[in-house]
Image (cartoon, rainbow, N blue to C red):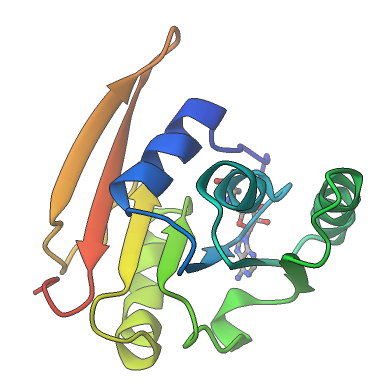
Amino acid sequence: MPYVPTPPGVARKMLELAGAGPDDIVYDLGCGDGRILITAVKEFGVKRAVGVEIRRELVQEARKKIAAEGLSDRIEIIHGDMFEVDISEASIVTLFLLTSVNDELAPKLEKELSPGTRVVSHEFQITSWRPSVLATIHDEFTSHNIYLYVIGAHR
Ligand code: SAM
């Protein structure tokens, strides 16, 4: 499957919609090159950010970028399967997966996340959940949907 990252403007908008700030811990499930995590720490000042990524070469790329930014103390990349990682400390979870994968993840999100946690998904919805916000943003190539869900208000 080809690797497709979230464009910077979309990442920024996802974090803005989630209200990211200094009290937050952000988890990006399937974090690719770590760009959402880096934006969350650098531009939104979140306390900590954690990415989970299954592809070794992307884990290495993300860790290299994070080190180059001097952010290794604030951003952790876990090499593994996001279904196996405890995400209960997250106050914001970001996703850019597929609707089918989101739907598989939904029970885990509901089980582990506290009320008020924001789940923000680029492009793909969680079919049985109700978004608090659905935003569409346009760049020079295409348009992007962003779904914001708030645990407790998602059904
Ligand atoms: N979140 C990043 C972004 O928005 O730029 C990357 C999104 S990319 C479309 C999806 C990523 O999820 C890929 O890097 C893929 O390897 C990873 N992924 C897919 N299934 C996974 C799993 N079960 N556990 C961890 N990572 C996974």
